[in-house]
Length: 349
Image (cartoon, rainbow, N blue to C red; front, side):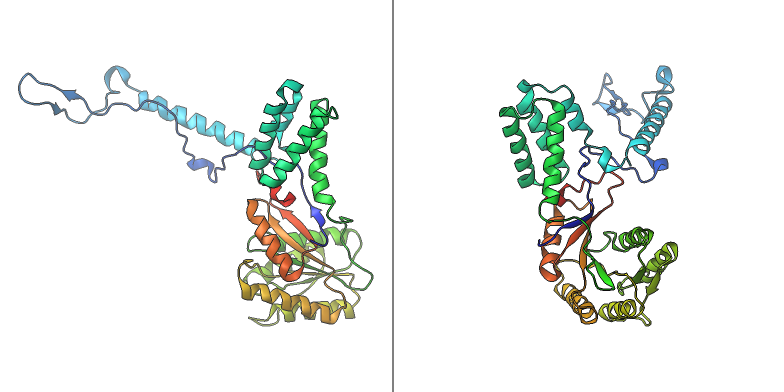
């Protein structure tokens, strides 16, 4: 891609597989306990074998077995829930603890084993085989060449490798807003990635830096999209342009917003767009229409076209990025949903 300005890219990615429990009150925990015998087989003196009446063998001297088992399951479930809620939603940047442990007591004789486990950690974090192999082989060469002599040095080299991948493709990571008013930023991506929320956060950030912001509700497909963006406009103290009638064309709404931004001297116009599958030809063509409509109002706009990538998507990020870049020309990424156990390592690929 021609430019890769990056708003929020985390290089420390989760490597441990966590279990999400959506409703703590209905948790089921399975234990590897021998099941109680519910049927007894009798062999009477005459006749064939027969089963006695169904009864629980826990009766008599074993009274209370299931009561104790139920209590054990309940206590274990409570501990699991506490463990998940205390550590399961840790910021992604605070993870990769397994690599810290591997390198804490590192020595040269363990090189191959440690590198194999680092490779596994990166693959689990969705870095992809090509990038993972590149990083691990680079570490291996530096270790055997004597350039890396401690676990701390290896860890720093690993961080540097990831950062180099994220920053060397483009000259700068700052947003390019140009010199004309208004600068136009268009947000694109698939359904449910977090485009509208990211646009609201971006509006708050730019507004805090002193810029005057106009929001454009270009998501004309989703029923609540305009209402959601209006709430963000109210929270951030920004003005908003929405469709005046149902089934309005997204290109018309964005064109109207950019025109208002130009006439009233806004610094930046943030354009929301509808979520769309990168495999849907007609919907992708609509993005081209939106881009052309904006360019007719302000020459050279949009200044930035940011693709929102869901951190939980994994390697599916790659075809999304390729298709959106081919259609409208992506200038940067917004990586979302990294507040849980999402990995997002595929952004390196």
